[in-house]
Image (cartoon, rainbow, N blue to C red):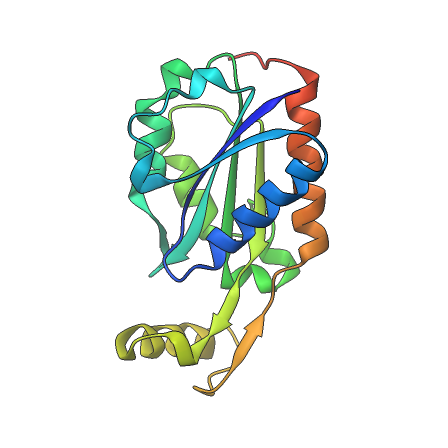
Length: 183
């Protein structure tokens, strides 16, 4: 069976939950998956996997820099792997922001990578004001105000399309089954 490595960065836990759902979906289909927080990924050898999926959430307009560092430092080891990136962000609650062209955060991330990716998936995140600290809540409220989103500090909305997450898991399995990409 194909092996998939999922390396993720999650600040508030929602991206971790999505990564865990991907793992469960793939496990149920008999696919071997290794799920690793980016903070524990330094000693991994991605060349041991058919697919390397790296993803994280957007915080203050940026993805965790450890994600790009992992991809850059391991690019030479991933020439025979399918390489995938997934982003979880609140602006993706709007359909036009679920494309690379429409999502400035994803474009900025990809522009700094010296390697090609086989797929990029953009997922809407979760808004959970009660769980945020004071500064995070204020910053997110400002962002939401500018993007016509909810600003009430009691608001909790999970914008994630879980059917999209499940289709993404199916795509990862297909990429692993299809074989090696050209570097």
